[in-house]
Length: 425
Ligand SMILES: NC(=O)c1ccc[n+]([C@@H]2O[C@H](COP(=O)([O-])OP(=O)(O)OC[C@H]3O[C@@H](n4cnc5c(N)ncnc54)[C@H](O)[C@@H]3O)[C@@H](O)[C@H]2O)c1
Image (tube, rainbow, N blue to C red; front, side, top):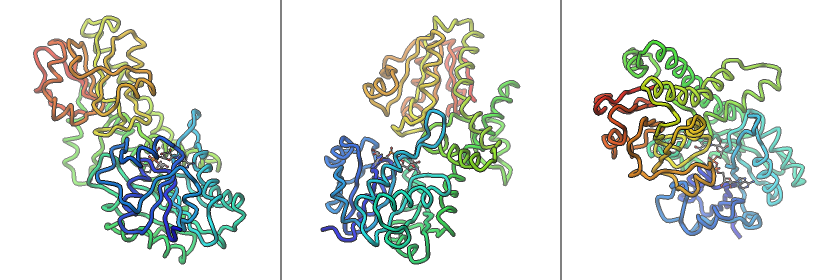
């Protein structure tokens, strides 16, 4: 018997840290996942996402067995909400999780969704599905809450405990229950949203705002490139104004910023509104990988090197700095594009395993010491490994008249050796 246990459905990037934090304050936490391998890894104390800093506490158990979570009274759903190949919301993992929860809930149980969704999904998709599959009545026999996740993998400062958490519930009574779950964990405090839909919308808006701002920087970078002005220098100057917002150009990948806007786009279009600005930002950010590839080819040609004979190093395969997360990363797009034009491309990333990258992306990784005599090097993701540990060594891997492409302007031009040329977004 595990009375008052909390079950986390899906123990990935979001679910695992949440389970670990809740286990510090609640008597029993159960981490349920459909991935057998993931659960056995966690039970042996290994987290492939590197979010496990301490030993797993004895009141936290991971399982693939649905029956083990039957005794929970609160279920928190943290499963993926991806897009499909047409860039439409794929709610299948969430629906699957709701169907599983419906099989094990009892009268009085609380279900909180944490997965990122468009406004309405918790109450109009999850609730009715759980009701249908469980035979219990939404709002009478079981209750709904929503709390968006603001976790930022690789960021030790803005943790679950340290950032205000938005919570929402179907009514005030349930809000008190939701508060009791999160209050002990989130030291920064909770923000009670006026409705579940408001909380769902707030999460999407956070990511859309970022997507739009990065798109603006990318557009400016393309314009300034045509004028031979370095965007980083422009932004440094503009950034001295008190109300200038600090965003930088770059490739947008990952599971949030490059995905969540499509959730709101699809909902808006279903309501007959075509969101031009949000779509334009997505289009622009999606086109950046091609822009950087084309730029590399142009710079090689200007230097008198044909792509077919060139040796190109592409550094940083993950979607952002200092994490091992490859989801929707744009770096493999650049590797494949340069290969398509006949370049000999050497891909490198210190955070990922060669075999799993080959399996997932069909790209061979090169070891650090084999990067040499390169016509061009692109630092796509400036991991600390490049910017701190090997800041100078990178330039030794490039030919003395080669090209250094500093996508995120993370290096100074003074580091160039010989006749090496510099370009950044
Ligand atoms: N990763 C982040 O930084 C982040 C930040 C904020 C919000 N989110 C959102 O949180 C949600 C989860 O994202 P994530 O990054 O943790 O995903 P993830 O892929 O790291 O983890 C999800 C886990 O859920 C499991 N799973 C899939 N279907 C399941 C099911 N039906 N039942 C049980 N387990 C199931 C998977 O096996 C996986 O272990 C998404 O909606 C995402 O948009 C993620």
